[in-house]
Length: 120
Image (tube, rainbow, N blue to C red; front, side, top):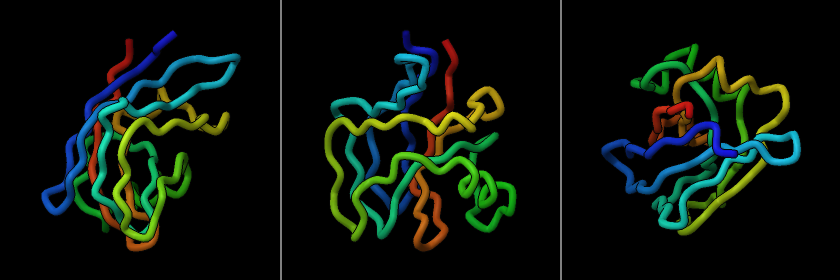
């Protein structure tokens, strides 16, 4: 059963498109991007959760959230990522505490894009 979804918005310097869903699967939460997901690449991209729209990579709350909620690292070394990506959320992450999924560069703290977390 899908419990949340959203559509990605890129930061001005990146190409990011597609959406995501989070569904319950065998007692776990599975995060999946859409089949049309595309990201132009970053040194060490991955996802995390935040509250509100991220505006500055220097925000200590955002940096802390990215460190605490990191999940589903994408291929690094600035390669294009195309197609569905999926991963299980760590059990310690309470998605009810957050409103946004952030695509973040973990090598050089940078906001690559974000999506509002729409609960169903």
